[in-house]
Amino acid sequence: MFDIVAFIPRAIGQSVPLLFGCSGEIITEKSGNLNLGIPGVMYVGGISGVIGAFFYEQSCAGGDMNGFLAIMIPLLCSLTGSLIMGLIYCLLTVTLRANQNVTGLAMTTFGVGIGNFFGGSLIKLSGADVPSIALSRTSAYYSKALPFAANLGWFGKIFLSYGFLCYAAFLIAIVSAIILFKTRAGLHLRAVGENPGTADAAGINVSKYKYLATCIGCMIAGLGGLYYVMDYASGVWSNDAFGDRGWLAIALVIFSIWNPLIGIFASILFGGLYIVYLYIPTGMDYMEFKELYKMIPYVVTLFVLVLTSMRNKRENQPPASLGLSFFREER
Image (cartoon, rainbow, N blue to C red):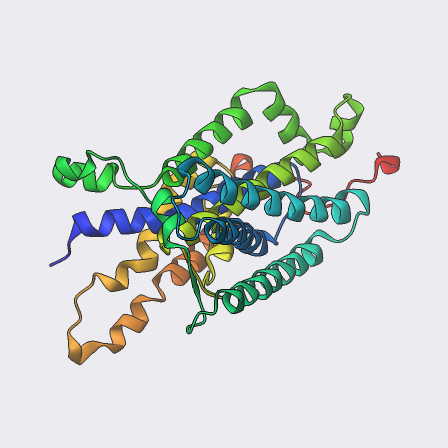
């Protein structure tokens, strides 16, 4: 039988990295920047948090850890690493006007390489016998659920059994939607993404909005990497363990038609599709069908991209200047 109560928490847990990446990329793309480096940013966000947690745990070896520092040190390290990635991207695409597609792909390769390099170095420093590093003491603070959740049956398990970063992901998506569509700053940001020349003529600082949106978007996406390691993977870092979550997060931007609120439901849907093969009974005689079930999220992604390309409504289309460099002297 399909255990819905066990499936939903796993699906939501799987959706959180996708939601962080999707929300961050929506904010970035609303400014007209197409950042295909989100997978690399998530990698850097994850490994930066791991570095902070590793050295803090080493300093507390044999002693008690301060809960506040155990949370804040990896969190600040993750935000800082992601911010640096955003600044590098903006320097290349906004200031130097490099091609955004090539820059994003290079950032992904660079981020994965940085993550694997420092991850391998930490594994050697820890003297682990396996190609991974476990930060279970720090992970316990990130994955800690509300104390009374276990006493509320299925309701507590479905709605209250997550770490604080899970709730932060949904809150950030809601706040992002409010800022984008209900505030003057959001209006200016959308104007920059639609027609930077007109926005510049109206007195809006195009470069400032592109820098802010891209850096904030990268910091949000980096939290997806931190969540995956510290909460979903129980503090275990393994090189190349993120899989294709960063690319799925970029696809979700199109699926959610550049709206963070729709991104919430899209991420949960794709999070469920990502692990549904684990909950569909096949029996030992039909194990090959599990491999077919693993293809479901990618088939749905292709279907969504085709369906989205057929939409003719303007509100369902990407920002008009997405992926294009702004040359002020040409306006």
